[in-house]
Image (cartoon, rainbow, N blue to C red; front, side, top):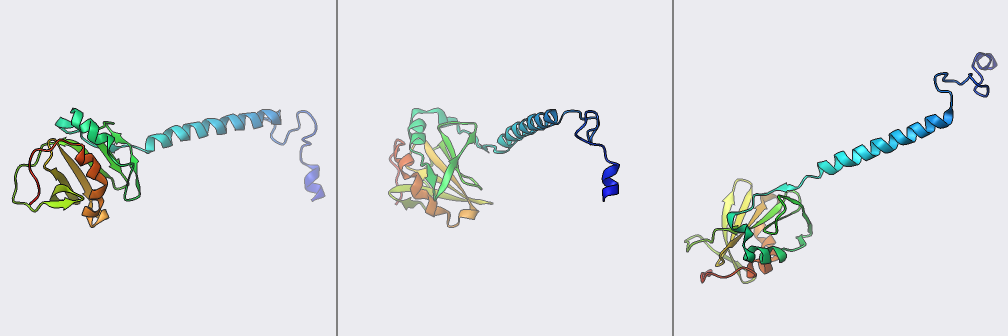
Length: 178
């Protein structure tokens, strides 16, 4: 070992740094800190781009004052799931969780129907089976509120009470579940 040490350059003398192309250790540290800070900043920008918003289409009637009132009554949480950003951001649409439960105000009012109407907390809903969940459309309101619930949250109807206040904020059209 002593023999190996004899052939090493002495880092204590100028020009005899173990890495001759680096002549000042302090510069190396500053450079590393700047590089690390730049890399962390770039990673933060990239990661912020990864937390993408849920893509939702705003219904034609979503810009009505009634939907603005309903949107203000959307819950902060649905079954313990926090609200997530939507694209586009609109008071008429909202989403919660992953996979997202989506609420859209401004869809056309459901006409009288033979389809079974569910009444949950005094609010009527028309269910429609989808390939990946159920669409619930408020019944008796114009405009209507649509809630899309993925099958992962089965039984899907248990999430509807969270939307009762939003539906109650919409004007009625005289129809009711029977």
